[in-house]
Image (cartoon, rainbow, N blue to C red; front, side):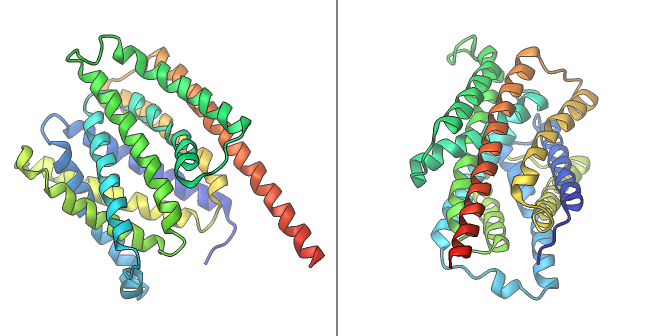
Length: 308
């Protein structure tokens, strides 16, 4: 059931974005001692209770876990896990604001991949938006690549890891767009969490560590906070449409700036801020175009209903 309460929807969405920012900060803080694969495992495994409890409480567990597309869930899970692993690895190599700014390129990659995979037409406005955004991405990562990829520059590797994670997340969004025609959101979230938990275990031979008490608590918190964020995102869509909530994604930059400065003494460079501004401008143009298309489709449906 849904209702139109945009203020409540925005509040839930902003709360989720804040939780994801805190989770990223915890992963970054632990990156010197905890491998990315191990962090992915804890993030996934300890999100399970928060995903299952609502299904059990509503008596929807059995129906919610039924699926007609197990292979699609595996593909979504593997690529989503790769994205999470690259993101966690990259967080340990570059600043939190820089990593956050690069992830803003995800909607631009979605536009490109939708054209390639789904055959969606990209017209002048969206082509311009993608072009503006990609220029912003280049501005952000170019200083990191100044020494060349052959150089042992961990910051360059980190920036490329975040960019790769962003592209993988964009593919996941396209993949999920096709899955939701037959699969319930709870089903998709459950099987992704299951797949990512199992997939992360395959990184065990590559140097997992036995965490001390404080590290263990923080790792468990990544799962709880990440799971809570997923739930808040889901509930936010009950009160406001995705097109209304999309611009609130950029609040993550504000959270990253504050957390990065307070926790890690990080100050973003002019290049990062300039590039982020261009990426946000490109995304804003995409959002505006999608709203215009949505209004046009609504008008056409209204005219068709009147004729009928």
